[in-house]
Length: 118
Image (cartoon, one colour):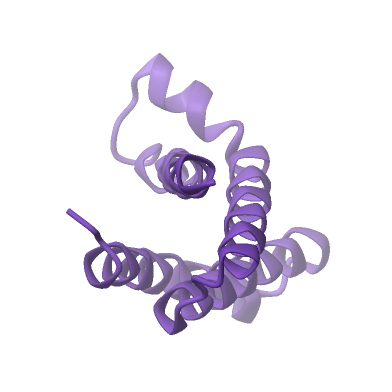
């Protein structure tokens, strides 16, 4: 079960980082970056799904941590702000989405650091 917990945590980080490539497309005009960025929404949804599975496994194992809960909440809020912007094209949702992304990354890194068994 520990392997699955680590696997879904790893997949969450990978999909989150792939989704974050969307911010690079303005600065790097490379076909690979553009292709990854074109799947921004899919990668974001997969990151959220993997994070939820990761959290469910942590709860089943009795390993729920506050840093993980905060990272999960931030990830879901980031996704919701992105979805709201996508449907309503309201600038405040876009700004909130852009602010929440880096904040979520910081919370994910803190979760990894404080819960590492290395």
